[in-house]
Image (cartoon, rainbow, N blue to C red):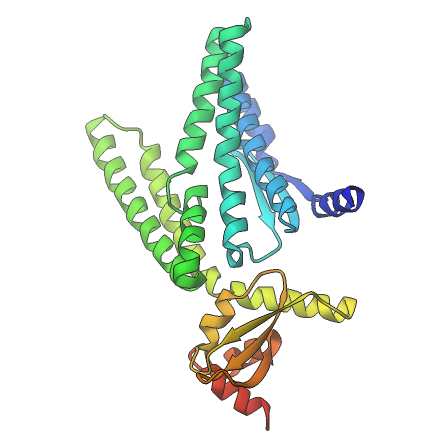
Length: 300
């Protein structure tokens, strides 16, 4: 059992590693500036931070397809609609900040009980604490933004949770831009705060544009898997005839193939829809069509 799980885990961790050529350029520039070791410390901390995301994602059965190494760290790409699994998205997102805090704790232990270079150890501890706290800010593309969406998903569904998290991100991004501009003019705040605000605003917009298609991407992957393997694990989901198809589609699991049982108020089942039929109905009639209409249409 453990061996089979291990093989499946390693299969999901066979990622493509892409290295941005600018990594070498930045290394040379920092070396010329006499700050190479600080860059190496921050870069290595970010790399471990991102690898922790990949490890936890694989543990949840998600497929990690790419680890892209850039001059400012690394980014992991997960080839699954992770936003459809709130518990997985929250755990994967929190893995990064928690790992950074563990690294900071390890550095502190080394500082107290070992004989390290004091300045180097203090810089390592501070860098990982800042990395952890920064990523806990509830704004996209930071880990905190994904945790916020995951916490809201059960009550609001993925579309509603994403809209709320995007709005919070834009508020935070806008405030950061304003604070950065005022602080830079007064010489009291690093202009990077403004740059971070712009990044948060841009990434929030990107998340808002891509999230509505997450459910459809998930269904297409399941459809391809079903055609390739000839079978798929399934879950039976009960829903009212008045339920909107788009809302139901957004709440389905990212892993199991769903069969939707449409149940009338008197408890009588009036029909069933496969997840593929549900998606086809949304594409043909829009997300506002109710399940009762789709069931009646499927009988003709």
